[in-house]
Amino acid sequence: MEASEHPAVPKLQQAFGDKILDVYTFRGDVVVVLDRSVNVEACQLLRDDPDLLFNFLMDLTAVDYLKFGREPRFEVVYNLYSLMKNLRLRLRVPVPEEDPVVRTVTHLWKAADWAEREVWDMFGIRFEGHPNLKRILLYEEFEGHPLRKDYPVNKRQPLIGPKN
Amino acid sequence: MGVRERLGESFFTSRVDKVVAWARKWSLFPYPFVTACCGMEYMAVSSAHYDLDRFGAAFPRFTPRQADLLMVVGTISHKMAPILRRVYDQMTEPKWVMAFGVCTCTGGFYDNYATVQGIDTIIPVDIYVPGCPPRPEAVINGIMKLQEKIEKMKQPI
Image (tube, rainbow over all chains, first blue to last red):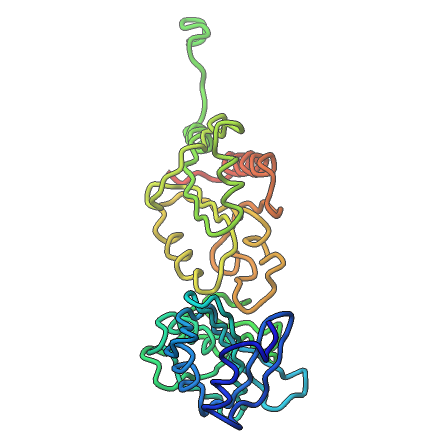
């Protein structure tokens, strides 16, 4: 589907104007880049608009663009699917390194709970308003966020063994 | 007097620790600590085709307190490491540990933040069976090597 054909694009542009930073199609998937100040409102609109009904958060993840030399460094990515309208949409929300905070969408989709915890665990991006934002895969004593590209490949966490 | 003359070939003599060693080496009760894909290979080893009962090591005990061979099968992450240590501590003496598969031996290709680089950093290991996963023949070879080791070691009674 081309970006111009996707029913969500004009609605988002009308509602959020210049907060929509970019709209494009990548290999048949429509992608909307938007400012983090409207991420919850945009998700709410996409979920509740009767023409869209994006009721399924398929994935919520993040990307570290450190080696791309891009500003801002992080991006939180939402992959949405509408079961009723058979539509897909990807949202990308840039997040700066010095203030890695995004507002949570757990109140819109329960599925966001663990996904946001995983993003916090791996990338150190905090989700404001999340009910239980703690590490999900690693243990509490773990230092750092291993999927950040500046996490040293050979770094070992001293848990119990002397050589690890 | 000659006992041998009076009783003939109806008995043989040995030493207590040799008998104990013989009993121990032919009645290994494994505890399979299975965490990853090597578990499939463990299932192959422990099922009828390879017949571990030949070595007295076919009967898995699913509590560490009744086992004397801890088979660590699969990748051990740092989060799992304290649990492995605890299972090892719960086993009664004498006890042996087999590192089953290359992940338990050295960490394998998981040279990353999450994986323990060899379980010998946590617990003592008696026999290493590398391979990704090891063939059942390799595991049987490992068990036979362990039996040799048990036979030769000093037997605490």
